[in-house]
Length: 116
Ligand SMILES: [Zn+2]
Image: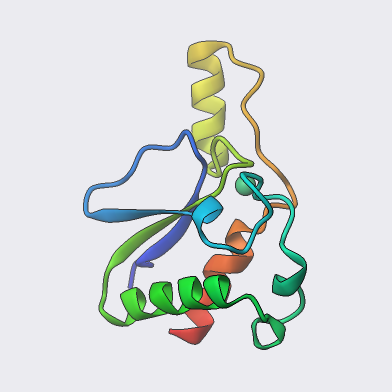
């Protein structure tokens, strides 16, 4: 079965039928930055004490159980698809496309899948 949830960069297009959920609104991260977690969202999910972040994760888990298609969108990467990044760079000659190698996006998608 094709995954109903994936992590994409801020400059990637939304696929048809997918909801767009931005990590900056999740309560997990500091300000508009998806590279720094809040101190109360560190460790395993069961150690988190941030109510907003816990509710946000549970809302995503519920969507998975309902069979919704969801993009989890970070702010620290422009593209998460390496092939797309290459194509886009050739097209635009843009060397500033960001891919954060230590992005939390994939980890959060895995967390949601593990709870769903
Ligand atoms: Zn990122």
